[in-house]
Length: 640
Image 1 (cartoon, helix red, strand yellow):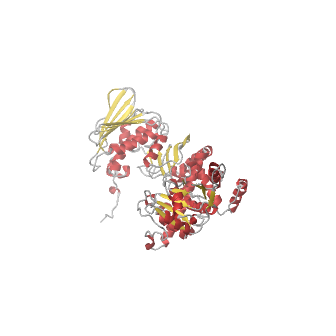
Image 2: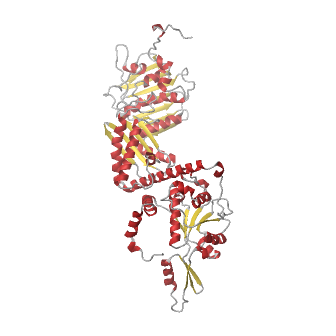
């Protein structure tokens, strides 16, 4: 039981670096692998600070053959070796006193990563042995420490040219249960440092593996972004990334690129230190991106109808690197994982918003590709939400794959080489079923005109029997649940009559696929069959004409019954249903003789396609009226 007499005698005062050895977790986050490597980062940050402020251009890191000791050297100014007080040199104070360092006064460092001033002393406190060597003012100095305490005073050991600091340390087994540095973790951190500081050359030597690597990147974080995008295998939406470099009270380096990935991936750094948990600089970045993109959309009247863009839609697929350098960062905890400076939100926002907005206005084709990506993201989100709501309303038994009864499936169970024909009406479906190749061609007849999904609510779309059957037959699901690997057929082919009604039905189906199954189009899985509208018999020869223009071309080529040629016999098909199965096979189904048109939307046309579908198929009739009136003179003959 605790004593009731709590007096001054019960207060323990830990001298020097004792508190670090007593509670290492408070200073390095723990004594596991992350804490062990934190000793490397603390030492490295001091060398990087010299480079960041223009005093060093090289850093050398050596992982020794024992795997448990490291040397970090730079060609900076060298730690001061003159007397700090009557007893100790400045170097001794830096390595033995908490919160001692040259970073609290602005004269020495404009920005610094190791700003807590505990780095060197904490590493020393938790090391069995540490040796600091300094080149400065033509001399070479050395001081040795054991568990944070000097073994001998600072001594001059010879002459030297140039300047710099070298720190060797071996962590203490009394503190760390396992002392084994991971070369891969260290290499990754060193490579990032070389990306964040243009012109900095970092050399890593692993004595155990007999490996030496030099990291140096002339384009800095632009090179870093390319590496991230390649590693994530995310196809960029635009080739030219957005870059921004500012040094106005706040130094900011930023590079952004939208990709087809479904998540946002931004790596942030403060004074060269990774902030894995984000913070106020990331909040300012997100605010600036959101405002810039919305302003561009509003200025160019690109807002999509029927869907609201959220901040998450705008940032979906965004990949970027943001690096800020500030004089007095306030980190959350000694491990510096999250930035807390409240003024950074408005400062970063104030730099990013005008910079990105200006870039979007001056790169219109890139900007439109980005906006198209954002709109597709919003529509996919809406579709996914509605699909989830619908699934939650249904019983568990309905989740089994129940193929529609009217689907005449093919015998080939693999999607490779198999085809699904979406056919207009039962009569055409009957001819297609009889004329097809049953091993690899499936037929799904649809009754009448399917629902216009552009002007219907998503709940209505999911309740629609024809469209529900189509989704089930295709097998991939909808929205975020869409999985292309579950596609049951290699080709999805829309087979409609070659007249205005057929064109309307094909348009309604394409609208549904474009809005709710867009990846079928982007992966080249959707096709339009091109059945003939006319049969033209000239003597013993038969020709098939797709439309009136094609008919006239054939007649011109093969005569009009003059010069001894037979008079052509022209038959116009009212629909696919009246074609004999053999004729339908020959003209429309047979891969050797048919004509297929692949449905494709070029990257630069995505935004225009979205707008045209919305205008022609949406609720706003005035947009359609405008379209018709503007093109009335182009209509030579209407098929009514």
